[in-house]
Image 1: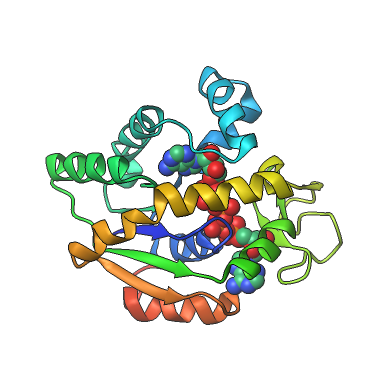
Image 2: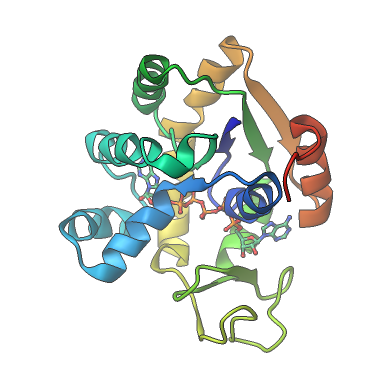
Length: 218
Ligand code: AP5
């Protein structure tokens, strides 16, 4: 099972990806999360990625591509995986196609989560994340039981540096200019599955399940 989770910043890719991964027993490869872990650990990759990310710009293709190539060759990806936040440029999509062809793997579908811009801004500005376990909340739509504290591990919740107004504006512009053309790439290949994601997380997940079919694990 190989699916790409696609959509603008704040569309809910991470939220739905976590549910799909738990239900279908496949790992989620979130390039954004891998970069954030590297920034937190102060690795050379993190030092390069940090400036691009905090400004809301895309990290250069060659860096992202190598990272994905290494990750999908790990043993836990043998039974399938979800790509969250990759590919994000036509160049990345073309390289991924070659990479997967060489590995004899095919993409089952690209789930495109479509959300109005006003709602995206509301979701991004209200997002809070746990720096320790990575859980994601929203101050109104998906609040933790105790304000500011992670339900899962009890750590303090944080606001991502790129969820500030200026970085949000840049991310939405980057999406329109560089990422949205990837939709046509997958539409031409018959892989695009459009999902109206102006709905609650449960409603969206039901739409996802209708596309993926019944889980064999979970
Ligand atoms: P990345 O982490 O991939 O960020 P993104 O694509 O901007 O997506 P987000 O994580 O912001 O949103 P999401 O769609 O996962 O939404 P979420 O579920 O959290 O990338 C970050 C950066 O890394 C990039 O800007 C770039 O610099 C770099 N990068 C990463 N990949 C790259 C690549 N391939 N190439 C180059 N650079 C790359 O939900 C958002 C909020 O809404 C949460 O608060 C959530 O609780 C809430 N929410 C979710 N669903 C709903 C709902 N249905 N109703 C109400 N609220 C909801």
